[in-house]
Image (cartoon, rainbow, N blue to C red; front, side, top):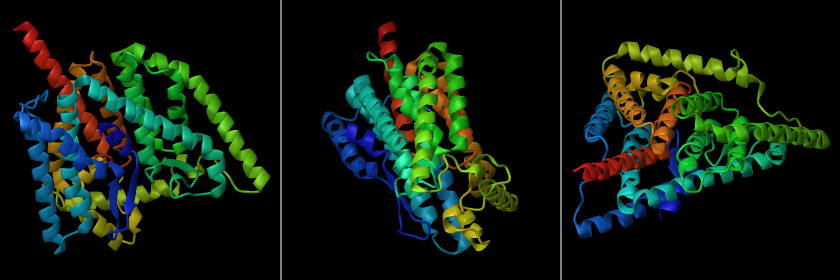
Length: 404
């Protein structure tokens, strides 16, 4: 069941159930079954003491949940109606994320580090498989210009329908492969890293590439041995990118199609993608200045952006910190920021542990890419967080018994 969950997290789609759609994952179908399969044995044997590594976790969760509920009520009061995108994608979605986190912890409590390793290896191998399929198929998919899956506007999207989300998944898989998986009994081979680096390039995600550099820097600082895998993989990845890109252009010439590997405006500061985000950012700051303490309310920004003439699918704030400031205010941003800093420092203090090394790199990568998009609601992040904190808690409990 945990294997299906690890793989299912990487297959996502937006269903046309409201004006802006409902974001779902195959893992959402598996989650209730997985929760029951894991929790029922606990109920039969008597509920154990959940070994979170940090006792303050529950306080932070209550605080963040309260902020989102209050923000939703503010949005309802301001708009005079329930904003469906805010209710389903943000409020209900938050409780889904918390369920993923608890299930991540239960994977460790029920099956120990072996179960955690099985989940993480499945997660990484699935990402590697999708990256390899997408990269090898890029020259052929590119001739079709766009597909509902794997490729859109000459940018790889995997099964996320979004190149930035796919790019960040690749960075997370790299952090786990180079960190935790490389310290296991069967270390990750550098050949598995090549598809990830190649797919990251062809995703064309500027934020994901910057996040990948930041994550690599963290891994280098905490343990230089972690980068040995990257040193072997990077030259082969460059070669793979050259071959795939060359094949792509060759097929385009033979078929008389227009083809590019990365859209030119991806690195043009005056390009349409940049100017659109600047305009959205100005609107977000305007709403923040109007309600700086508790924010404008959950979902209000999208409503205002659509009213200002922005398209429905392009009316989100491309920055997690700015989204929090705009819709939850200084109070909400402080609570979410405090949670992030608390556990960033916890993983840093435990940086000799392989899982903590990977999570430290992932959190730094998250901080970087969150300045270019909204990534708090990535389901796999919360499963991984639950696993990491539970692993720390279990190891602390074992250490205390040995010293007692």
